[in-house]
Structure formats: structure tokens, C-alpha cells
Image (cartoon, rainbow, N blue to C red; front, top):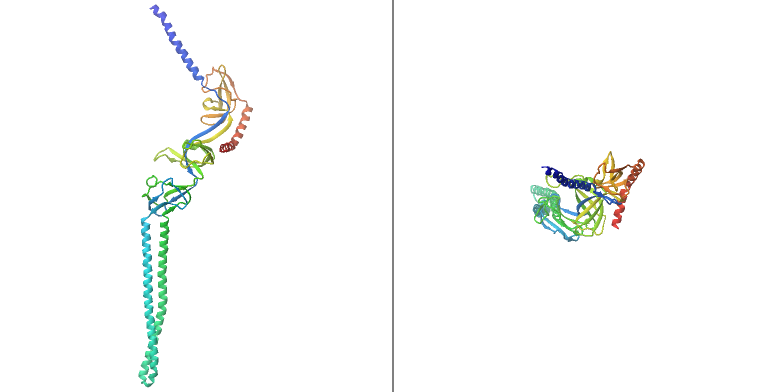
Length: 441
């Protein structure tokens, strides 16, 4: 038993000491996680986004208002067309039937006009013949009146009355003939107006039918629209209706990038933020622009989803080569940029009593040094005062025993640096513009 008691501490010490050394070595290793390269560099607060290249201006063709039709011809996606080329033809059976009925009514009205003219001409001719007959009879009666002096008074009176009767009948027929001319003219004019109205109606319908044949208004590449009914690209045989897009012809001389931004990215972007683009399908090609339009309302990613995306439009002001329509663009939105400055990871900056501190590695231990921050991002921050750019910083807060020195900034340094930060914020936009111009060159 005595032998066992003497050997037991030796075994414990052999096991405990290595474990203790391992523990301290691990602890020391964790505390030696340092930032070794705090040398002057460019600070950038950047958002990585993706978008699709689209044309700034596009000629869009849509189904005319008030018409339901069927697509009988639609030019293929990506076809190159010249101005005046036929790109789409619609067929509206309802409008075609109405047009045919109006044409029939026009022909019927013209036939009725011709018939009415013939009937009225016949009536006029009959009356005119009666008038001429009475005139002839009256002339004959006047010739016979020379023999009346040899007739009895009664016969002479009868003949005179017959002549008066013929004269009265002649006057009556002449007035009727005159009235008939006015009536004929009025009836014919009414029929002619009806025909004109129907012809105008037919011409209007013909114009609407002609509107169902769509021609390219400019030279370009065609893009089929999506059906409101199916959500898929329009095909021949699909039904379309009032104001529904059919095909667009983008102007390929000026492009933009449409970005679908997440809500977190959307909140950080603003109008005129610079954007740099690269394109997987065009290696080596780069483009530069800025945010031009931000949608005020987000759209759900899918039906009933609480996750929304926001549509952002960015210009393409300059590029190595103008990107092609429909390409995927990889964008870097430059929210903030400071050239040639001291940049430190946020993980190496610590708070204490509203002040910012870093821990500078010394030969033995650390120096707790106050710093003044400039612009910052979630990942890093610009140090405006407190560092020279040659220090090594700890990313883990050392223990109080390891901190050998504590250095604070003077009031004059803080005031002077704050003024410099304010001036730099004012000139940040001009720096972004100058940098974009350099890239463009």
C-alpha cells in the first residue's frame, strides 16, 4: 500500500502537466489571432447583386383596345427585322363578321338607292306624260273651238267647260310633278347619306382589321411577350385581348441592367450609387453605370410569400463592349469608397464607454489604443485617427493582465479629425464620379 501511495502522485503529475500546457497553448493561440496587414488600402462598402441586361428604349406592340383575337402569326424570338417588316398578325372573327355584314348592308343600300331612283323616275315620267297629254288635248280643243261658232250655245258651253277642266287638270299635274321632283331629291339624298354612313362604318372596321397586322416600327431584334393567361411566351394560336403585349423590338444602342434586389440590399441602395458590372457570357468585358430608379414597392418572390424583391434599374454609361440583350450581369454597387486609407476589420474594433478601441500587439502583451472611425461597413471600417497603418491588431479582446499600455486620443485630435471626416463625406460623390471616369477611359 505504501508503494502505491508513493507512485500515484507521479502518475497524476505526468497526466496533468501536459494537459495544462495544452490548455495554455490553445488559449495563447486563440489570443494571437492578429491582423498583420493594416497597410493603407482602398475602403469599399460594396453590395454584390445580379441583374439582366435590357434595352433602355423598346418599341412595344400590343393588341388594340376593345378587341379579342387569336394569334395566327408571330415572328420568332431573336429575329432581326427591318422597319416595315410584318412581325405579328391577329384574327378577330367577331370583327371580321361585323365587317362582312356592314359590306353587305352597303351593297343592299346601294341597290335600294338604284331601285328608288328607277321608281321615282318612272313616276315622274308617268306624270310628265299625263301633263303632255293634257296639253295636247287642250291644243286640240282650242282648234275645235273655231267650229263652235256654228254650234248651239249649249254645245259651245260644254266645250268651254271641258277646256277649263283640262287646264285645271294640267295645272294640278304640273304642281304634282314639281312636288315629285322635290320628294325625289330628298329621298335620294336620304338614301345617299345612309350609304355614306355605312361606308364610313365599313372603312372604320377595315382600319381596325388592318390594325391586326403589326409591322416593325424600327430595325432591331424581336422579343415575344408573355401571355397574361398562361404566363408563358406567346405562341401562335393563343388568345389575346385589349392592350395585351405581343412583341417588343428593343433599341440595341442603349442598355440598362434590371436588378432584383433583396429587401436588405434595397434598404442600403440609393439613387446615383455607382455600379460596376461584369458578364459571365462576355469574359473581360466590363461596364460602369449608376442606380437610376428604385421601385417604391416590393413584389413577393412567389404567391403568398412574405419574402419580397425590389426592382432596381441601373444605367450602362460606359463599357468595354456594349453588353448584349438578355445577358446576366454581375454587379457591384459601390455604397461608399475611400481611396488610400487605413482599413480595419470590424471584428478588431471594440467598444467601451462610447469610444472605439483596438488592441495593438507589442513584443510583450498589448496596447489598448483609442481610434476614431470614418466611414464603415458591416465588415470593415476606416480609421481616421489612432493608427499609422503599420500595426498588428488582435481580433480577440486580450485579458486585462496582457494589456500593458492604454492610449487615448487628445481632444484636439478628435476635433480636427471630425472636421476632416465631414469634408471627406462632402467630396465622396465627386470621388466616385472621377473613379468611374477613370474606369471608362
